[in-house]
Image (cartoon, rainbow, N blue to C red):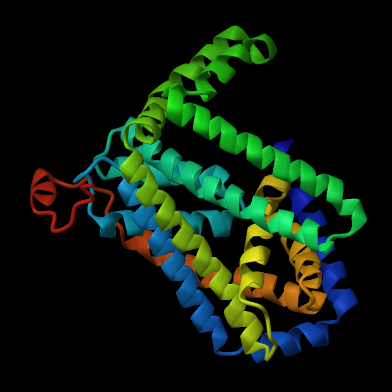
Length: 337
């Protein structure tokens, strides 16, 4: 049944994309993609840099001297391939990172805990960008009246998420395990306790990091901010390649506002159709045509496939063997604070 639902959502998303393309015009879209030209390679390089930055953030979330940065980067690129080629988003890609890190000698708690920390901090920075961007769009009156309520709800949810993070960071107490245990009334006590037992070691690592390591936490947040700015740079490069002018703040606003796509449309495989529709609306909100927004969305899908292809090659060449003791003894780089 879940497969049928996913297939139906994928078909629905493809139908939405087809409608958008037909309304704007296939010839118009192809012409715009042709104008992007060699900027495709620039955007792909920027995205590869973004993934390298996120790999650095993940590296800093792992125990010091546990792995070399190059190993973590290979894991990050391999997970990107999983995410793009399976249309499962982070639901499969993030566990895949933990599994690949564990294959390289980390304990399960350290591997999956590090992945959870990085994804949490990436999401937290995304939430902050989205709060600012969506608030500016509302203040400008750039959104359709029918969207204001939903957008305000998204802002409120992200503020609540930020407050929950602050509570966990200050108190040093996890929030997920208690919630899972209390869900026993709905999903069954035995099942809830089993889920909480599996989650508890990972949450302990996560909470210890954000509570006990404020300096490293700050460093990772700065790294994540750089990664997000690289994504905003992609927008600037594509718009300029199309010969259009755009204020320097507008790519940051668009990138910030786009952050809620993966949250609001998590149930749509690859956010197909949803992503293109939101890009179309947001580019219209900053004074550009919907055609430019749709082109941007398509450019990002293509560049992600290019980088995912590199990830597949890396995954195929990666050894299944765990690193030996000598490997750890001769590491040229460490992630010490």
